[in-house]
Length: 250
Length: 239
View 1 (cartoon, chains in turn orange, red):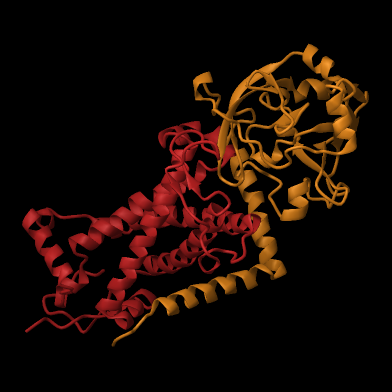
View 2 (cartoon, each protein chain N blue to C red; view 1 turned 90 degrees about the vertical axis):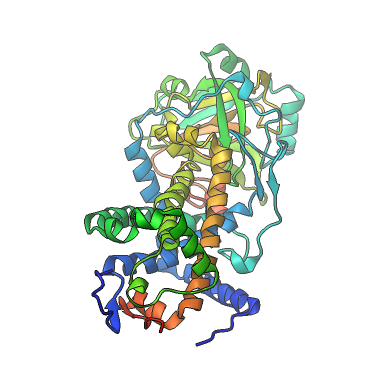
């Protein structure tokens, strides 16, 4: 028995099989199954780790020489430019939603609150990593100061960058990550105020998740009971528009 | 494989049901994992050693994007590649674990894969290499056992490469790195782990190429039938 296999046949065979996979992925049931793997991973990871299991913290000599900025490099909206020109003196972070005491916090107030400093690794969904030293205020302090209600299940982070068509970047996390000790609203990277490319004046650090969760250019945080009424209901800009997993610990 | 009688039968039961099921499930899953993995790699086709690595750092390998005929999906889509990869990965990992435990339990490992002293003699290994290089495939009862090269490659794949690709894959997850920080330390940092994950994938691809070549050379119909039905036509002894 002799079988002659040409490179062309192999390429065509591989392409045909993969085209079959692509067709499968357009089937609604298969698509749902592929998208629901996230739930298994979230359940498995949360089962394996202590609620407050810490992301690795590094030594100062392990910091990346240049911390790569990704996504929006500058929101460039008239409102943001005005804030930037004023040194963010007029910027406020609004804390709204399911809270008994809504807040509006200035950068000076953030500087005056208790800080946490952490040298952590930022892992982008694309595969690269950068290590940087962050300083900021634990999100738990803010939520407690705003007297968040028990009915709140998620924290939504609203950003200044317009991703096109008037849609602002946003992200969301649940209470496990919102009250994690390493979850901070950071205003400094490597001992300097956040640069515009890295999210000035304030960004989220949620260290057990991928880079797209680390929302930059924060304008408001909102405690909510459900994500379904926000954006397209998937809990984040890339979740809504590119099909990324909401649970970004994977 | 059953113990071979003195005079070899025409047909012999060669592969157990557990081996056959796992083999074909694995073939499917590794195909999905490899092609979707290349799709994910295309998002940042550079590899580094150490804890960190991004555009301003020095990679040890920079590639072009893999072409669409070998990636899943064919058109670059990081989210879909990740959905395929992360769906297939846990099934693949638990199937390997189950197969390992099952194969220890039913003595597949001890009977068919463990090396014996005689075949580890340098002269015997050399003879197997020469026979292999000359494509002299075993006949009669000898065809019902794995030779030392086959055992070596199956043991390396099942007990080294596959666990390695699963463990390095787990360290790609920031959540897993918080849960098991020792694992990413074991590989020397996340970017080293990503590099090892990639190299292991290509080691498995190389195994696949040799494996398919051997099946074609040894008689594809008989080999594939034995992996589907379990039954293998025993090659006649050479005169």
